[in-house]
Amino acid sequence: MFENMLAGEKSLQIWMAAFVVAGLIAGIATGFFKARKIQPNGFKWKTFRNEGIFTVINIATAGTFLGWSTGWLTTNNLLVLQKTQVSWWVVALEFALYFFLFDTWFYWLHRWMHKEPVYSWVHKLHHRSTSPNLLTTASVNPLESLVNGGFVPLFLTVMTLISPIHEQSMALIGPTNVIMGLYVHSGYEFFPRWWNKTWLTKWFITSTFHDQHHKYFTINFGGYTTIWDRLCGTMRPKFESDYLKIKDRTRPEPTMEPAE
Ligand SMILES: [Zn+2]
Image (cartoon, rainbow, N blue to C red; front, side):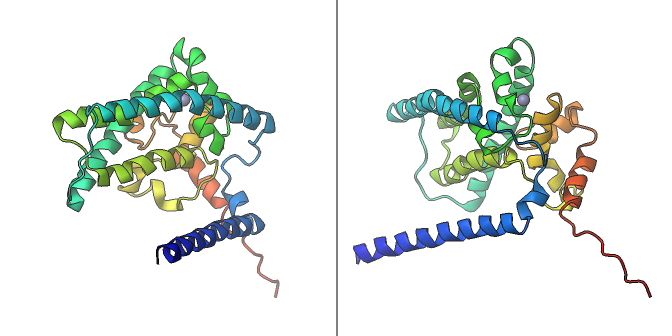
């Protein structure tokens, strides 16, 4: 029975992997990705290679330290997750608290890291890529990783004193942190044309927003939302029109009407 379950799980994983690979191949073959590339000529092999090296160094140092310190806080009961049943609105509330606190933390520390000498010493490394790709996400000075990656254990430790976060909320917080980082550095725009036009969605960044930060340096500092950039006037004025230009590439060319 147990072996059957394991075999079933394995074949499901193989099918899912095959599905993703087939999707990627179809996406490349049909030009789906090409049309959605934010900076069509931005990729440079040398930058990509350096980012690979910095990613390994960053994960081996800051990643190891953050993992070790989170483990230490947990074993000493300074960081506690609630393992009880919880209603969906408590999970939503805890997730929203994390989401907007991290966004605020990221925005202000990010702006500070753009000031000298911190920029040259720390943040410049992450900005080597003016057209980000997935590797850019972790191609970061380990000191910067401690500042940004340290937020989650710090948040959970402070909340242990107030009202410990539930592990069900943590199951959302962890992946959001990783997926958002990868998505905003992907170099591709997958969100719809109307995203920056509606009163609800325009507050949340998409990959174009952060891609422009890598291209122009002095604008679009937000990590999850556009709130602080809109409030402080640091959003690129042409952000929305540039976004639409990228989305226009995904539309089919208008065909000429045959002459009568
Ligand atoms: Zn920056």
